[in-house]
Image (cartoon, rainbow over all chains, first blue to last red):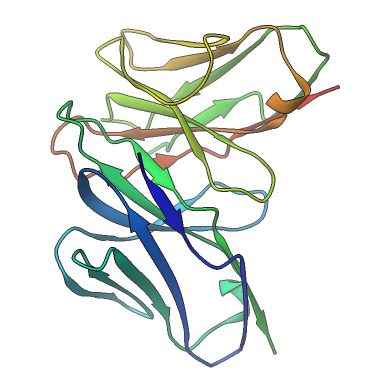
Length: 113
Length: 114
C-alpha cells in the first residue's frame, strides 16, 4: 500500500515563493506527479519526477528524493490565479504497466494580495 | 483536439438507485481510469480499463463496475447507491504506450445521493 502526506492548507502573498512538501511511502515507486486543481475543475498536470533532483518548468519547480520518500513543489512569483489545491500523487508499479496514481489529500493554497 | 469529456456534469439520485457515468478519452489515448473525489479530498482510484478489460482495481466494492468500448470510451456504473457515494467522479485517459504516466482528466461528473 501507499501513504502520502501533504499539508492541508497554506497561505502566501502575491509575488512571493511557496514550497509545498509531500512525503510518501510506497512498495513500488515509479514516479511522482504534481497536479493543480482549481475549485470545481479537473486536475491539471504540473510536473513529473522519476529520478532524484529538480525539474524546472517556468514559475513551477518540483524536487524528488527517492531515498527520503520526499518531494516538494516550488511556486515562484506567486499570482492570485495560483490559488488552488495542489495534489501530490505517486505511481506504483505493479508489473501490469498500469498508470494507477495514489493521491494525497491535496494542499489548498491561498494567495493573498 | 478534444480533451477528456464526461457526461453528465451533474446528477442527483436517491439511495438504492443506480447510476451510469460516461467518458470519452482524449484523442489518441486508449487507457481510461476512473477516480472518486470526495469534497476536500484527493482523488481515489476506482479502476482502469485497457483493451476493453479491467486492468487494475482500487479498494472499491463490487457495486462499482465499468466497461470500455472498442472506441476506447468508457462507462462507470454504481449500483445500490449510498449517501457516501456522493462525490466528483473523474475520468482520466492516458496513452498505453509510451507509458509516461501523465493522466489527462475530464471535468468530472458530480453525483449527489439523497
